[in-house]
Image (cartoon, rainbow, N blue to C red):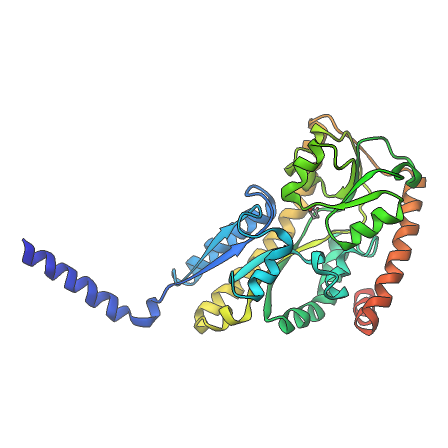
Length: 325
Ligand code: PCA
């Protein structure tokens, strides 16, 4: 019996040896900042499964959603410094590093999924170049649904936002808070429910998706469907971690990424209405912005767009040129 057992063990050892380096297992950690049932996170989960099966189990990706491993603003640096191999982050969170990361939050530049896709394709080479200079490789992007205004009190014109406690999620939304005369405070989604519950925040621009994620109806009754822009999340990997994979595994990652991008854009679009329906079902008032409010936001948007173009210089002009074609 003991002999049989040692024979079995020896055989298992031989089999493992025969499989050789091809069976080498790589594990990546992928921190992200949104809850497990958010459509972005569900898409990453499917991406991970696809990578695992396309690579024949050679690469597995462990997700760490909901800012459980790193807070949103720290994820990119964590991947740059090798503390994680891959990550997901809101691209515009890093606009201060390079204006190109803020191209998708220029107000009213791209307000539909089609425009957003065109702007993405026009800006992709510049985004990839910037990421490459930081040792990162873009895998795919997925937009959030169009951004609207949530408020504790009714808002019919910009002046109604004066003195509001304004939640920003990136430099761009912070600038809008300043422009409307509100008090800006930057709060990432993982802390947003608490900030709303304690009254630290009374107005914000975000998607119905995030409104749903944080049960916004518990403190905020109004949503104005402004459709100001569609900010994107990007999933990226450390170039060094990618280069360490064999070619078939690299191909598996890129194939799964292309599929994830397509699936993600589709589910964002399809779910954007579903998210709004949920807010209505919870008793929220959803309205289009009044003409006054819209004109007010457009004037602010125009100024911010001009500021962005100034900062982004020739790269910005080139992106806008490619986008307008
Ligand atoms: N949700 C994220 C970013 C954009 C969005 O729709 C947030 O509010 O943090």
